[in-house]
Image 1 (spheres, rainbow, N blue to C red):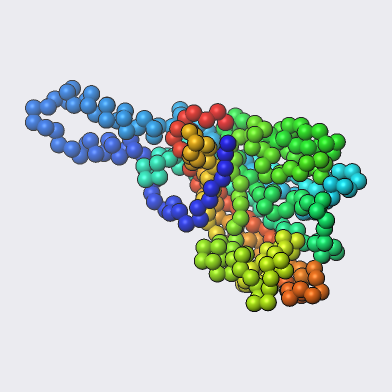
Image 2 (cartoon, rainbow, N blue to C red):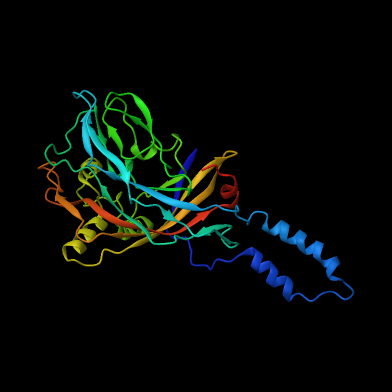
Length: 346
């Protein structure tokens, strides 16, 4: 069982170093005790090195790489009583090449190996929330939203260089039969039970991967951190919880209005650096296995907003709603815990 954990405020600026180099330099600087021969000292030094480096020595030839999948498609509302299945999107490769990583370097401060891309590894993805203006969100209890933003996050995979197909997904086909697919594109249909596309790779044999979840905008992160203008905040004194809550009209909160205004005035939209970690359940506890530090930058000209026309009596009629935007994601560093690096079978 794996899950993702994000920490936007974690300090990753500390220098990386090798515990071996640190130990050797310390030994060289220490004066030898009187009457102690080099032959007598050598076993003790070897023992110290062995104990300190047991968890900080990487495999002989790890050669790790990154791959990514991004979602293509638009969110829809589909009724289980509808006629036939409908394809609503697919996961495709974020880039057509893998991101090779430098050899791992041990960081004593972090307690893990740190790897950096040999060359910049970036891809662009789109985040979109359902905005069905024709129906105004007037759906019955048998309807469900498919392909909405929270269900289809971008995915980053960590795998060995020799593994050229690190993906595998459990998919419901157009005929309603579930199969395992191992090559993109991975198509999703409104057939039978509702799948969560972003979770379809978890137990199907894929390489370890993390999802880039929200928030991925600087203003959104700030609103959640401070509680000022977050999505749970009523937008006016006259708002009611029922009137104010609607996933059918994109993101809400005062931060969205500031974001839209910045875009309209062609002002900088900000950027966000955050860490995303995968965790495994070990002896009943969630343990970090590997993670990545990313820089997320909104793509100029990609922001889409619509006027809210869901209900003529709503206090929010005419208010602009943030519907979608695109992000350029760049992987800055990769972190792998020692036990995971030496034992993982990916």
